Length: 135
Length: 135
DNA sequence: GAGTAATAGTAAACTAAGGCAACTATATTT
DNA sequence: AAATATAGTTGCCTTAGTTTACTATTACTC
Image (cartoon, rainbow over all chains, first blue to last red; front, top):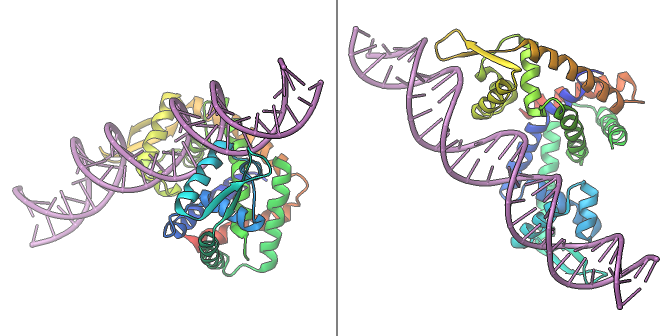
């Protein structure tokens, strides 16, 4: 289906800008949010794990983690190794996560207003299939 | 629907990387391609028009246009005004457009393999609704 | 018609996000 | 023990976009 990517991409800037605007009040951005999200889902994770999950090179994740540490949203403890870091959200990080999560959900509701749940679910299925095909 | 944006965004990096890799052989990138696309659809356009269409600030478009001119894919003639520039693809630009268009379509086919046309069309409809809601 | 507003485009400086190459420190294999 | 692999970091570069301020031209207003 010609033009599919174009349609897909036309949404990117508005979405990312809306998200970043929302997250800005917490000194966050979408890229930082991804790490918060991952750590909320996994309690504890290493840097390489996050890097592999998002397909972002390690240095990029190092810098995100450093920033989140500065903000006090994340702490690193020794991991299984003496090389590995075990990263986790702080209590403050958890709190901020929840607050942002609510606002993002509200934003998602606004964005998807008037679209049937079934349609949205099918769209997510399409996303997953696309991802499988591309990677 | 919670997590919708996350699903949406998980696709962005793979898609943009595949596109950029493809376009790289022509010294193009997705951001330059957008301008090529617009000029293919509109024959002739001003800088402000493109800027407004993509929601990108004018300086960003100025630089894209300059780059495309360097590549010989685009020329600017005087517009309605003595201020305005009338931008258009060169013959070479047209040729490159067509070649890239074919490859992008092939990529789109690979990415959407195994997904019913109906599903894809519904997905595009969802994109349009989302865009309407967010902007 | 003169003076003010708006519009088209550009330049410079900045920021965000990510990649690559090279490195240190530790662990694993051979 | 030596070579190799892995976790993480640092430095430097690129891409893409923004903001601010500017020039040149056009349109509006009184």
